[in-house]
Image (cartoon, rainbow, N blue to C red):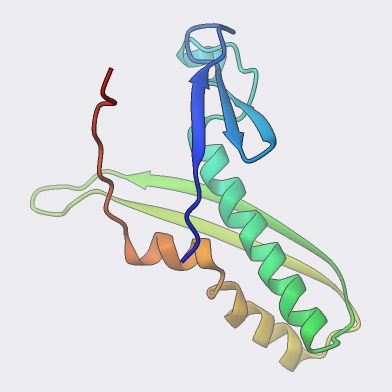
Length: 139
């Protein structure tokens, strides 16, 4: 099992601006101006959608390459819908994912790629749920 470590630190660019460091990569995050941010980067849900979309596209590319299928291009459009529970129903989230594949693929290959999309690791993580252990750092 590969351990992944990501560090998020305030950037000083407005009240919610953040620097995200993953390995040697640095990405910004922020909230929209409508909620008091400076909109200097994607908001947390946009980053989550980005992770799902990137994982989906990469998984399809890997599968098509392994099978030598004529996949020319993949686009993934995503949307997050947060639903509030009513009564005894717990709130839940819905992710909509629309995948556009280009290339000389057969109907069977296109159908198989749709199945494979659900096998991307981020998709599997979101579907099964996760534990989050939180603690304060010792100073």
